[in-house]
Length: 236
Ligand SMILES: *[C@@H]1O[C@H](CO)[C@@H](O)[C@H](O)[C@H]1NC(C)=O
Image (cartoon, rainbow, N blue to C red; front, side, top):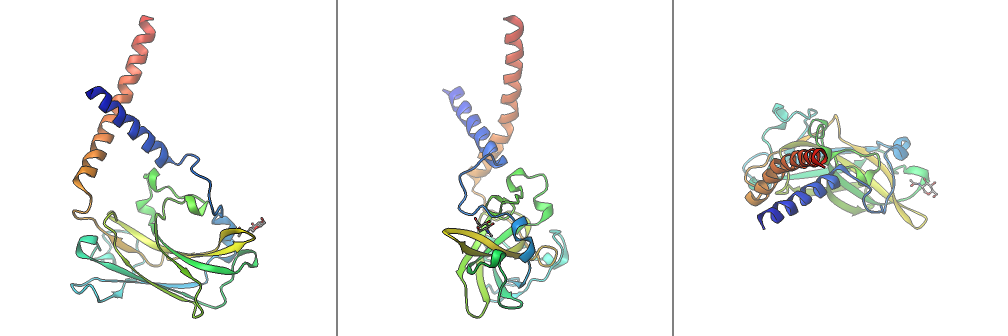
């Protein structure tokens, strides 16, 4: 029974890992790549404000051009337990916004992306040129209809699952291309404005335990499997 249990857990680990490594994945609604939007990227003024003091209704500018967690401009680290929030304002610098293939923007999508140092060596945050498969931008903050004043403001409470990391903002436009909805424009605050989050006691203990067990037993099982294979082959 115990063996069955561990085997099931191992399967779960292996499948989880395979999923994290990004196999095929489901069909995409929006197959657009960043490369496709190269000619129209930019065009936005994006500012980040954050609740950095005790009063969580007071936003102060967060203008840190360093992705380093310890950089003084990234202090204090924001977190869900303190009820910290971000306010992101994206304004088209010079209207009208120019989109790929002369398409007409319908929505503005705002996402949070992990900075380079927090993507390195983490296959589960692997960037991808296909925008919807880019795991370095896992958080969609808002999808807003196109506004006449070309200004988009969104308040984002730091989610409980936000790990210790620095982030930047990416803004996309989506457009109808025939019957398809595609991304047709993007900009980001990479190298210009980052924000840092920490995690205090937000990860459920059970989750931490499961992750620890998973990472501890997976290599042991693999090793046992190979040893068993070899021994069986020799005696056969
Ligand atoms: C829009 O559709 C055309 C025709 O299928 C395609 O060539 C083009 O790349 C599409 N544009 C975008 C931005 O997806």
